[in-house]
Length: 482
Image (cartoon, rainbow, N blue to C red):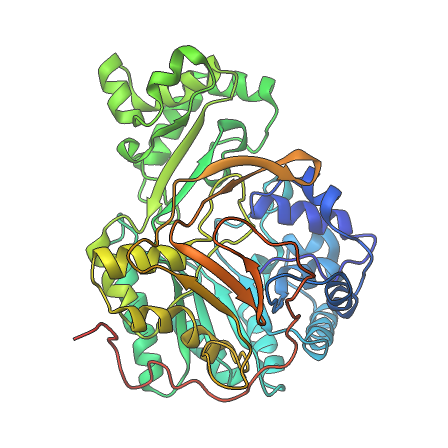
């Protein structure tokens, strides 16, 4: 539900700052790297085509950006007036006319923009969502991509899907250890909607969700009061040293708030990178283990180690999708698209770009959850069908040759490694994929198994989509090999 287009000049900086905050990206890198030679959504699409893209790109229109473009700061403070909603709908129509694949929106309570304010789509009332779904219904293609939390769920997405006549996709569909029934309820509700003839799907992941961060940029904790929004080291040092803050945060960790995905499982918090040589022996050990060894409270260790190392300590939080048997039940369901990835977002916190390689190596070869052809279908033709992507997702005569070559006995993903190669020296985490031997985009090889090849950008900006109603999961529930 986030993006950078359209970008009226008077709101461009706010739109970029909100993206940086909600997606855990470097604002410095965004300012250095984003080409601002556009204003409207159509301008942005033209810019992508002019500059060239290496993978194929389809662009979702952003509900949050529309609200900010029309309402400014008020978009994160209140509902829209009828006049403002009319302008928001006009921007959505302009985006669809320019080739958007659909609309992305969020009402998830954890999504905050610059300064900790709610991202703008969270302030939309239900009628605004319904109105936008009706606009989508005026087109012969498109999807409604919804990132929901506690406020909305599958029943509301089903209503929007019925209004639009287009597929509705719920994200993110993770397994929550602290709410073991949640993921299965979502899956069953989506199944029931499809049984009623409505194409409602969920976006799932075959990997654990983990985030790596330093405490001055603790993205996931900022949604948990009283964790501070500031990133100023002097201010943070004073806050983290205060026993009152520590006691209050312990109470938050012990609370039953379902939106807090971190529940104080310190055994799931390894010390990824120590900032001082004398502490290098702690790398790879979890906070609970080290705290017990030292006879201190885990939260105290978590904060004190960071203070000792002047915020250079990098922790990893393993949060969701940690129970593989339960995750596997979600993955074999036809209505769960294995297509959830933060791609370039949170790029200094995580890298889940290798989810397909992990599916083939871990879930097929090691866990034998499905056979290889089924796994390939789950990450190729299934999402292509739901999103209406034409002539892709299957290797057939006349279709576009988007391909990978891999060794089924070797394919896997490595641990994340730090790189500082983003604009302005920004940090990102990357993985390698041993066993991946080649990648082709539209018939042009872009990766040879060792490195990227120097070729002219072969990707296409996709603007034409099929309007055929998906049949995936409308009658079958399991796809695992017999």
